[in-house]
Every structure is written in structure tokens, then in C-alpha cells.
Amino acid sequence: MQKASSNAEGFEPFEYTFEQHVRAEKLDSYYKFSEQLHLLASQQPGYIYHERRLLEGDGEIRNFQTILRFDSPDNCINWLEHPERRRLLRQEEEQNYFQYSGHGNWQERPIGRTKSSC
Image (cartoon, rainbow, N blue to C red; front, top):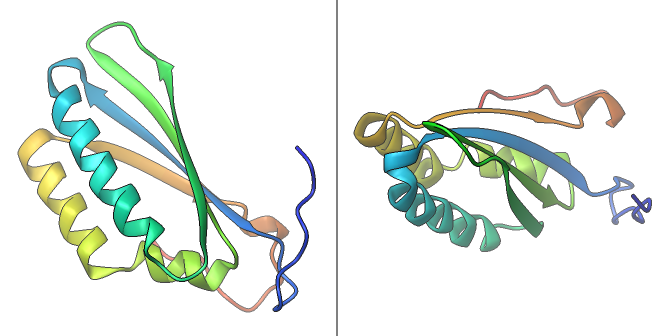
């Protein structure tokens, strides 16, 4: 991967990676939910891009990976804490038993901001 240039605050673009575990019978709902999240993310300050890929496509559970890139850790944290994002996640967890985990490239960041929960 080519090293990206830093932004005005001196940070390189910040990536946050999510892994999603989706029941095969809930794929249509997952795709709709995922597009809602990506549209909302794309409207946030500092958003650069997202990429979603299927890691495991066979069986009862489908595993996806989504990478989000923001221009700074602060803008990513603001997205992770966004009320509408949290509402959509809660709704999907309750209705479709959506499971996810995530992590960012925090170890490469300057000290001063702590990791927030997803």
C-alpha cells in the first residue's frame, strides 16, 4: 500500500476496519443497512472513502470486511459516535442479529486521543 500524504493537522489518513458476520438469509437486509451507513459516513467531515468486501461467501454465515478512511482520527471518532450511526446499528442488531467488530490503526497515531468503543 502506498503511503498517503498527511493532512493539515499532520496526520496520515486514518483507517478503521470492521468485520461483519451476517446470516445468509439476512443478506438483503445487510446490504440495505450497509448502504445507509456508507451514505451517512460519506456526508461526515473528513470522510475519504470506504471499501466493502466479502471474505467468506459460503455457509450459513457470510463474513464481510469494510474499511473506512477518514482524514484524521478525530473525524473517525466523531463518525463512530454519531447518533444516527448508533441508532442504525442498534436497530440492525435487534431486528437481524447483526454482529460486528472493528479496529483502527491506533498504534500508528500520536498519543493524545483514546480509542472509543464502536
